[in-house]
Length: 465
Image 1 (tube, rainbow, N blue to C red):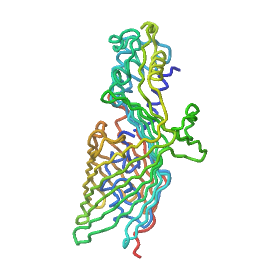
Image 2: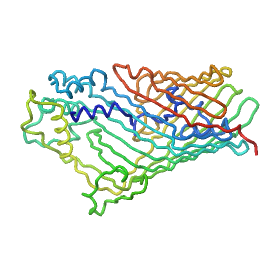
Image 3: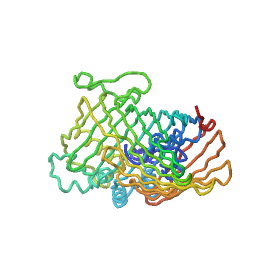
Image 4: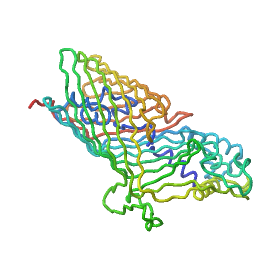
């Protein structure tokens, strides 16, 4: 099996993004394509709009192991994946076919992916005091984008256009050749606490306000990117990931974390959410919130890369002998020789602060419609690259079933058509959803997403003290 084929299979099999665009994989949210500001209540309001906790629907709500995964790629279409399959089976691809692959992988969105799970979440609603919620959440995110030069080097090797402008023996730099290339990943363990309550009680209008706090434990961080002719390269990994740091142990600037306890963090941070929510004549809902205000500090097992330049091989393989394994080895050799890593004491990264706004309408007892808008308030790693807008709908044809759907676009993704189903009782609920039912069949931006929850419970109505 060729190395690059394994790489392609990995891209298709999961989704990770600090990075891009996946932020809540609860099945009820996924089923509406990410529309959530006026829909979420109880513990689901964490990280979205803590003001909604003031209008919780149950005395106690809790869930265990609820979440999902999703993945999309503008490069790995059915056609390009078949090319990988042919090459892995020993069928040589022509130079023209390899050029087509290089062109396909010249994309800002080779991979946008994410997975997050609520290990445990609970909320308690006491109308005289308000609603309280707590959760522990694991979030893994990944993003990859390849520039023209990087994609051509990977697939074409000596036939890449960049060879034409470089003299034999000339030192070249990653920051000069690979503008626009980026590969990022992170793993964060979140401890969330949120509170919301009613602040205005009028006959026709109720207004709620809330605040959320999260303590963040960073378990993994990686970035390789070139922007404005400047290389950014750093990594930090918890001992649970098994990375070897023996080369740096004698360096006084290296703070080594070798603890064998579960999920030993190498970075820490704090985040805050602020939210307002309103109900108008018990039919119209309005929500406005700002989420992820704060920053993280990475201080252990932290390495930063410097661009030292490299030499292109002076006697590359001829095109007739060249294959993907040569391309993989060549790209790896160049990056390994060009980037020199050294310990650094601290790296501070801002959280992806976002403005969220939503309006929703209840149509009788069976239908609720909502419109969401989300905009980035900074350019921190993981923030959306363009505004998100979505229209979502929940329909309850029977007292025990709920279907969700809608349409959404933006945030670096194509237009999505979500679909979700839930079995609902006054006490128990389970469901399954996908962010886009067309993604697996798309010719231009295929993907896969799945969100599942089967241990969601609600106990009683909110209780007066």
